[in-house]
Image (tube, rainbow, N blue to C red; front, side):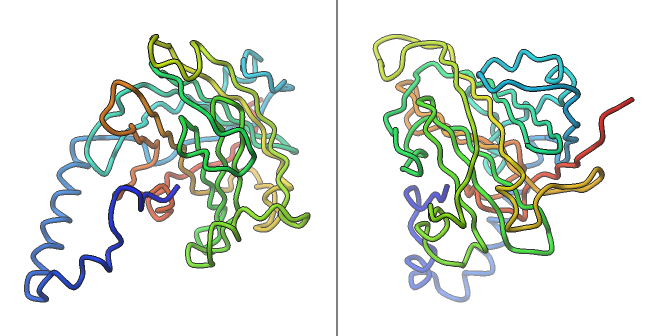
Length: 267
């Protein structure tokens, strides 16, 4: 989600910066980001294999098909040159009907209190998925799941298309049919004990992507980012991580998204 809760809008600072200083500040910022990124070497492209068998959405991801999926575990704060405080392993697959995902996340303090669909789920521990099907178009999608198995889903015609209310409209022409299941390894919302983590398994029907052409073909490449918010009694601020090399603290920065190539099943 957006991160304006952590920083003031750029316009609120602009009046305080003298024009003569702005080029120097921009150079310093670019150098800082470059130095931070140099400390992290993470992949910027992944393959999404075709599922070789049926998948039951139960949170376990124990079907043989999952064993052939690429493990995505480079979840970092790339913009800061820092690894995540906790580990994440995610996998993606596809078939004619669905895009499948599974994420296994370490989490020592499970926290979640939003139960309604399209609520402020990012104020909980959350797993997020962003997909931009075409680099030649501005449209992209966002999906979220929290440990209570509450969902958030939105279609953005562009980043400048309007409010979040427009993006997450639940009208018939914008309904989403994502199915998810979660597994908790610990007790939810009890800061007095120590937890181990949680997992989410899900599938998104390709008809949810009809606004941008629907299902991909073998060989097609999308841009994507898998992201986390991890709130914890152990942290002074939530741990924000992504598998994409984001150069700013903004999960909507699709120009930095990694590439996802859809490949056919091996024979």
